[in-house]
Structures are given as C-alpha cells and as structure tokens.
Length: 312
Length: 254
Ligand SMILES: Cc1cc2nc3c(=O)[nH]c(=O)nc-3n(C[C@H](O)[C@H](O)[C@H](O)COP(=O)(O)OP(=O)(O)OC[C@H]3O[C@@H](n4cnc5c(N)ncnc54)[C@H](O)[C@@H]3O)c2cc1C
Ligand SMILES: Nc1ncnc2c1ncn2[C@@H]1O[C@H](COP(=O)(O)O)[C@@H](O)[C@H]1O
Image 1 (cartoon, chains in turn brown, purple):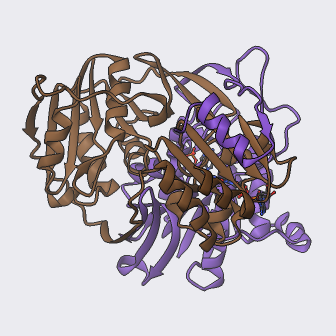
Image 2: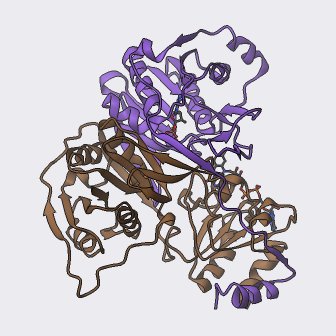
Image 3: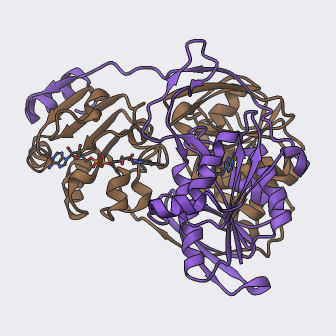
C-alpha cells in the first residue's frame, strides 16, 4: 500500500492538521508520501519532511496552485493518484473542496471525515450530526478519504536525530482558465486556532451582541483559549463565520470547552461533544446543553463571566 | 439562463435519530422527513435569481425514492418552474447522485447548478464537487454570496466562500457549480396558494437506466452504532465552585 497525504498549509507554514492526517495514514499502514502544493512552499516541504513516518515529500511549487483552487489542485492529485492506494486530506475547507473532485475524476467514492481506521479498506465515520457512527467498507481500487483531525493524535516530528524524508519536485502544471482567485478576508487573531486549542470558550445568541464577546476574550486570554461561537451568534453578525463550531462549522475536541449562552442544539453538540470536559453557563436550567455538560452553572452570563475572569 | 437546483430528501433537522437494534442502519420508520436545509437555501437562491431576471427558468432535481417527489413539490411551491425525479429505491450516495445530475446537466445545459454544501444525513459534503469534476465545470463551494455578471460565453460568477480562516472570493466562468453555505440567504416559507399551484407544475420521472447511469452506492455500510454516551455531569452553585472543580477535580486549569 502507498498513501498520498495532501499537506494543509496557510501563511507559508505547514498547518498542524497535516500531522493528524499522517497519523491516520500510519494507522492504515504502508509508504506515506506527502504532497505540498502551492507557490513558494519550499519551507513547508521541509517541515513536512520532518514528520515521523513520512517516506517522501512531493512538491508542486507553481503559481497554478497558489490559492489551492479546486480545479488545478484536483487535476494535480489526479495526475499523481495512479501511484497510490489511498489519498488522504484533512477534512478542512480545503480538503473538502478538493478531494471529492479527485474522487469523481477517478470514478471512486469518497469516504468523508473518518474518525478511526479499522483496516485499510474499512473506516468509522460520524453520520447524522454525530448521532450515529457508521463503519463503512470500500472496494474501490483507490480510497479517497478526508480525515477528521480530532479523531487522530498528531504524529510527532522525527526529532533532531531523525533526519528528513526526501523531497522531490513534481513538474505537472495544471492549466486552469475556469477559476481565478480574487481575494481573501482572513480573521487575524493572536489566539490559538480553534481546531488546535486546548481550551475553547464559545458564545451563543445569549451574548446579545458582538461587543459582549469581549467578556469571553478576557477569559480566553487567561486560559490561553480559542474563542468559538454558535451558528446563531454568527448569523446574527456578532462574530465572523470562521468561529462557528458545529455540524457544519468547525469540529473541536479540546481538554476544556466552555459554552456560554448556547442552548445546545444537536448541530452545535456535533462540533464539541467529544471535548474532554464541558462547562455550560446558561440562565435556563432546562437548556439541553446541560445534558452534555460535566459542570453546569445556571446563571446570567453577564454576572458570571466577569466574576469568572476575576477568579481565574 | 437556466438554473438547475439539486434537492435531497433527508430526515428533518430537528429529529434526534435512533440506531436500529440490529445495527444495520439508522431507523427511519415514521420519522419526519424534509428537504435538506442546505437545499432550501439552494432553491431560494435560484428563485431569487429568477426574480431578479438573471435566471429564466429554475429546474429542481432529485435522485431517490418515490417519496422524494414531496421535496420536489416543495421546491415547485417555493418557485421552481418544473422538476425532474430520477427514481431509485437503492441507497444513493454522493457519487451516484452526481452521475445522474451530470447527465441532466448534459441534457438541460443549465448556466448554473446550485446544490447544498452537505446533506445532513450522510454529512458527506461531496456531490457538488463531484458534479463539477464529472461535467468539467468550475466550482464555488460553501457560498455565502453569489454575484453573476454577463451571460452566455462572457458570463462570470463571483462566489464568496466560507473557508476555515474566513472568507475567500473566486471568479468562475459560466456554466458553473455552486454549493450553498448557511449564510447565503434565508429561505422563504411556501404559501398555501403556491403549494396548490405546485401540484400542477410539470414533474418528469426518469430512471437511472434512462440516463444510462448507475446510482447505487458501492461503499458497504457494515454497521451503525450510537455514539459513546456522555456521563451526565453536575450543576455547580457558584463561580467559585466551578473554578474549584476545574482546578481540583477535572484538573483542566491551574
Ligand atoms: C443545517 C443546519 C446546520 C446547522 N449547523 C450549526 C452549526 O454548525 N453550529 C451551531 O452552533 N448551530 C448550527 N445550526 C443551528 C442550531 O440548530 C441552533 O439554531 C443554534 O446552535 C442555536 O444557537 P444558540 O444556542 O446560540 O442560540 P439559542 O438556541 O437561541 O440559545 C441561546 C441560549 O442563550 C441563553 N441565554 C440567553 N441570555 C442569557 C444570559 N443573559 N445568560 C445566560 N444564558 C443566556 C438562553 O437560555 C439559550 O439557551 C444548524 C442548523 C441547521 C438547520
Ligand atoms: N440524491 C440526491 N438527489 C439530489 N441532490 C442530491 C442528492 N444527494 C446529494 N444531493 C445534493 O448535493 C448536496 C450535498 O450532498 P452531499 O454531498 O451528499 O452531502 C445536497 O444538499 C443536494 O443539493
């Protein structure tokens, strides 16, 4: 077996998600190659070559892949896929955008968001907003898979003695006259990334407005936490879309998740119920979030949050 | 410009599902079914394009069992002009649906196809991307804004996409495939007179064989289990108690 892992990277750096996907590849077993595609990605390729278990890094460094648009990226992976039994990517918005297109080009199914590997052809994945876990088996010659990063502990770096995997250039350049990158508006934050944070504190509709999220930020600063939100808070314009936690937002599984002014709809729970410890602060003692919370505090958040910040 | 909209019949998003005792699948007997919420957003967007005079015709399509005609009627009540039902009683997943849709794109030659980003039953998030690959068209997935300029060969589409880091805008040549995210629009409700009118709108039924495609799923569903239950927790009486528990019991803060 040989596995191709699509590296996830942003702002010139290898994203943490990649090490989780390599871990899933190790669970499948076989030779693991990592594909780094982008423009000016030499440093990213070096970082990928340091991941434990990686056999070879293939680098497609070309303006054609600059913004990882789905059309050229899928053409590139399709070009390489013949060498592999599995193609894996993180279930990020990049992986979700590109990989199904690869699967269809190869006329195979995609297995989305796996959380466990049973054998090289059998995987577990959540369905129905995580209210059921399906075990699925694929007979396709090529398995195209996205990986839920919270399902696999990151593989370590090789360490200073461990050396590096070989890095090879890929010459294939996809031509693309159909799609053009126009712009990106990315949230700037000094806080840890939602998917990687050990502590997450999220606000819902109960926060009332965007300004009140400052109450969460003060606590987040003390705990080194990332700040998330419910869909209702995003839809109401309190905070940007990249903060949404849930079935159709980000999936998080931190050591500690604090839900504030969030009722606990199944779509929200789908994104956070694998957290180790859950705290809920809500003024409605009947709120469903209390059914999954290890520690529930029935209180008005406008009183509880300042007190909590002060006592931490 | 003709707009094709793909709609899927799924469990109503408010229903908490149960797994069958034999672990073969999720139990859907007597469960309320509805149009996938992302497909409602897709229909709404298509209908708005028609109201703005950008779209000339809106065609709603589904692949699935006979009962899925209910969701096509809903789409017609919301403003679609006609519907196509590709009838199949077998389990259809994204690749099969995408293949049937690709044939319909070939037959209908739409300028734009709008799908949901994700069906809330399988949570696959694949069909639009697969359709784009099969038709060789560009894709704008997870759209929160869609702006069309020009028509025919000069037509262009700007799509703002919800991505992990924020928002990304791409420009696509037409025809193109778009998948909807939650904030693209707020779908309207169907009014009673429109529901009555929808009964008279044309609804074509085809079989996958008519289209020359195989839609049945090749992936085997071996087992379905409920997720690990979380142990119920406790209520704390004060912020002090909460901080104490987090420090000394759960040991997640110091
Ligand atoms: C297709 C689909 C996908 C979805 N995807 C997601 C998703 O990914 N993520 C997501 O979160 N949702 C998602 N949803 C929406 C979900 O169904 C709920 O509508 C949403 O999670 C509700 O957000 P909320 O809990 O903030 O708001 P509400 O349900 O309105 O709850 C607000 C809570 O705040 C409490 N509150 C109010 N004031 C105070 C106060 N002063 N002090 C303390 N507590 C207070 C209230 O008691 C209440 O419990 C999705 C829905 C659909 C249909
Ligand atoms: N059987 C189907 N019939 C019609 N459209 C479908 C079908 N399956 C998926 N789709 C479309 O594809 C979107 C995403 O579904 P999926 O990729 O399967 O999660 C849905 O919101 C629909 O718009």
